Length: 247
Image (cartoon, rainbow, N blue to C red; front, side, top):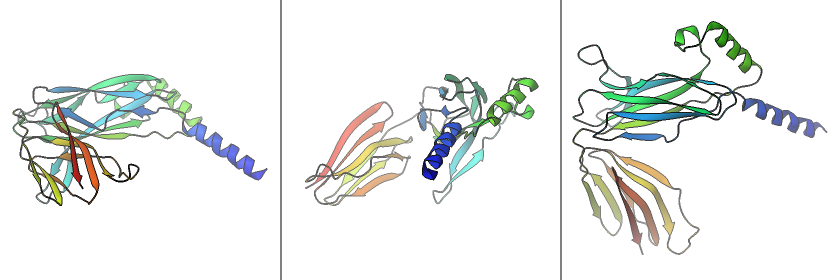
């Protein structure tokens, strides 16, 4: 009897935890092509109440040792705009079972590739948040959420901004025991759906992974005996199927 009561309590809590806004931003990685300056990012809300979402943008820079660091996007030289990416709007009101979009706008020189972390953070609106709602609407929203247990999950995505003269140049070096793919271009390329499988047992496969190879960097793996490696090499709009086997 005690166990049945515990299961009932857990199921009730689980149902309550799902109440409220539940946002989804689609893909984790997005790319701004060389001939584009804006990118539309959609935010979906599958929950049962309105989602108030803040959009924050930080630039990812890499140190000499390759360690990434996130920094605020700096103002342009004229002081009137940003040198990098900004979200417009940066505050979204997404209705239950609805969708809203924000445009990621790049401003500044595009002589090199740049990387940005875009965070979508659901919040309870406060006066200083600059959401276009009245005080009564804010208080009503808080009371609605306080009726249950709410878990509001945010998402962080990576936004790649390709240089104006994006150039792909992939160099492959292969030996009997090792495979190397070097990016000699000036923009990121993707090794997608990478999987290692046994040639003798079709059920023996490793996890499927995705790899971003930045300009000047190398993706490599050791070739194990009787295994096959399958993946897609993506260079912008070009997608190639590659298979590497070691029999």
